[in-house]
Image 1 (cartoon, rainbow, N blue to C red):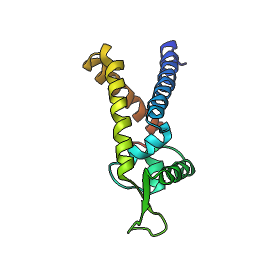
Image 2 (cartoon, helix red, strand yellow):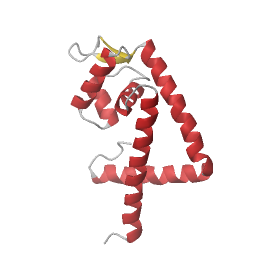
Image 3 (spheres, rainbow, N blue to C red):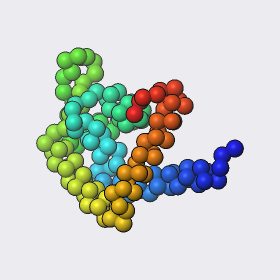
Image 4 (cartoon, one colour):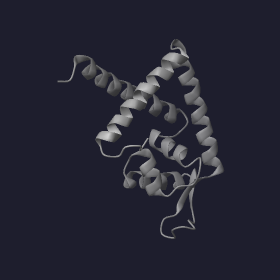
Length: 149
């Protein structure tokens, strides 16, 4: 039987995730982006990725990332480049305009995070993160993909 504390924790995690998504959407919108575009820009900022690779990293469907990638390329925030490893699956990379947009939205988010988390100590933040990472590891184990995270 699931304890009341566990059920309440799950509800709190879902509520926090929803609130953070709303804040993320508002943050992205302030810079002329959507949260989905922000996420795709961010995931390909470290290194160019194929659409399927980006989708796996984000945990969403390939079709969803393809739609967002097409929007980003139409807005000249990203571009498809040749993939030397697979001619049929180009790499999505940031353009200078995309790098600038990502930097702006990332700084806006960092300022918001500094405000939001000012009331929590570094120890509280680290402890919460450690607990969430352990929970995610257990979810991975349960789903049959241990060590995914």
